Length: 92
Image 1 (cartoon, helix red, strand yellow):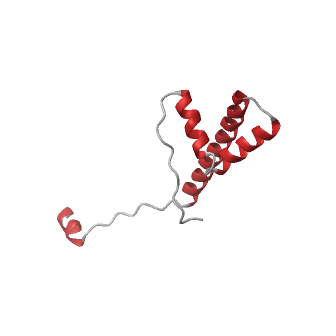
Image 2 (image 1 turned 135 degrees about the horizontal axis):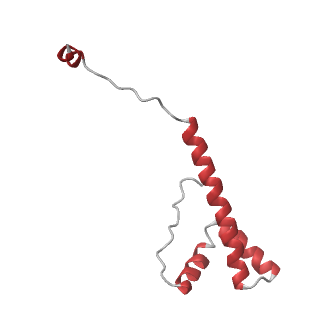
């Protein structure tokens, strides 16, 4: 799974293009596929489908940010400054 190519989101400038891109990616992106399948099963309107997708996308983004901050705080390396012996002699 990790070796499979990751499908990139193409640029879209209009809501119609954005909807088409989301539909295209719904076959490869797990979150989008689950939301769209759930929306079809429950008979949600298009507006409700995209509201649910936005909500879960925001939750995923917040979780990713939180994990990133935790990773950064756990992997802080002290700053080490090296100086050559020649520099020390020049300071005297």
